[in-house]
Image (cartoon, rainbow, N blue to C red; front, top):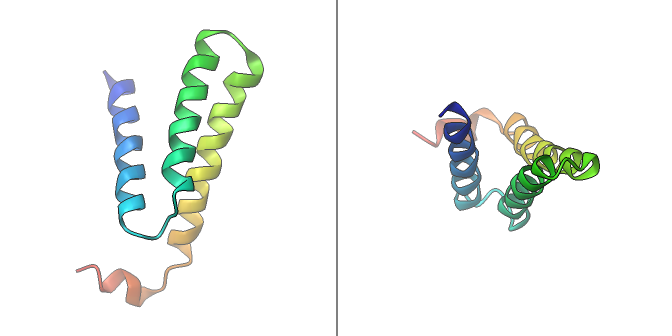
Length: 80
């Protein structure tokens, strides 16, 4: 149950961030590819595919984190 909630949460974060206009097409595509490669790589016991998926997710969500860190206070307060 917790795993499916986590996957749903990651998908919702990808959709919300893409709809905010701060990310291009690459972000939801990177999350989708990362999740699919990770899922199928882990099931096939392929080490390379099992590592490529989490790395793609790390890059996509890391880019989100970097953009959030670079936001100034005015951008945060305008969200109210």
